[in-house]
Amino acid sequence: MLQQLFSPSVQHTLDLIGIFVFAISGALLAVRKNFDVFGMAVLAEVTALGGGLFRDLVIGAVPPAAFTDLGYFLTPLLATLLVFFLHPQVERIQVAVNVFDAAGLGLFCVAGTIKAYEYGLGLTASAGLGLTTAVGGGVLRDVLANEVPSLLRWDRDLYAVPAIIGSAMVALCIRYDALNPFTSALAVITGFVLRLLAMRYHWRAPRAWHRRSMVSEEEQPSLP
Image (tube, rainbow, N blue to C red; front, side, top):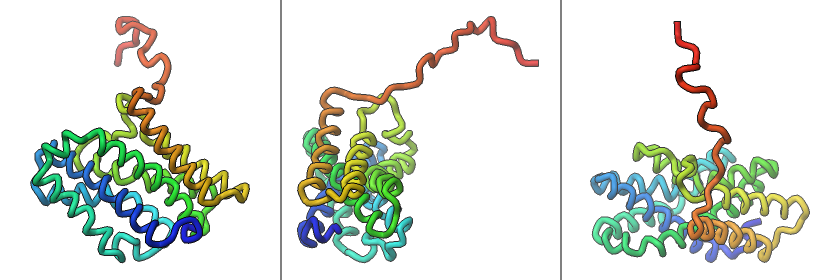
């Protein structure tokens, strides 16, 4: 199905661009955490390839693409070298990096959903793996860096929600036999634009109502 939507060369190029940008975000976090160059490379590889690797293992697409295409492995290393030598300059173009990261998010959630469906998963499971493809690497990155994953923090702009919407759009298009280059591109653009709007206007998911207890501390029963 992916081959019907994009030519192999276009698909491969888009994958490498997304991997490169995700890897930069991992390497930058490593710099902020004062990791050495090996730690930077590890975070870059995990951020760039973690989501797709998890998806491929779940659906049985083995060996995963990350281990069969040398470009997938070398691209995060190239991003690591760029950040290692030029991280002040990269930090200054963080807005541009975030824009490309949003584009990678939209692309990966769509490609992940389609690939999972191709391997026989149902629509809901396919959309879930599309989400995992897009955000899984970032979760692994934060865990390795001893951070609360960004998509779980209320004080971060929406990240998973745009990916969920993009994946759900693909699943619905498959369900109604409407998946084609136009609708798949529309799903990518929707995830991309929603992420940009979330960053621009600081959209965040709501927290639970009445988080603070209505009972004063003095009125709470004491422990025996």
